[in-house]
Picture (cartoon, helix red, strand yellow):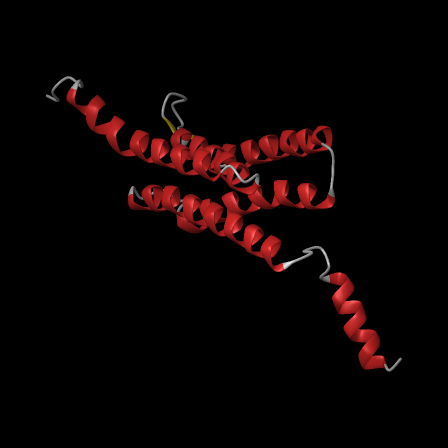
Length: 162
């Protein structure tokens, strides 16, 4: 066996985690969906001038999808997957906490909505990664409605400024 054959065999073995083209398409679609849905939420945040924008939300959703795709591909049990999800939820919560800023007076807190959005974006990525595409799309639509409609509704009930 020539060294070119050995290299080809080694590369083939390293890329053997996807058994067929159908599985490759499924994985790719799930990752693309996660990134696109995360990007939609990030776009809304970026339009509002928030630091965590399109790229951050896309990466969070894609990462969350990968964290569930890889254990599923590896054949891990559902119990093992729940431990992965526990770590993911805690880790993304920590990431979101970094977006929260408390003012010097102790009362002015900013970034809570962005933190919650990052956390939700991870959940959407998990849904996409697990093949729950409809759930991912519907929850993204609901999140966008909350982020765009609720501020308009609550503004109507604010007392007039002096």
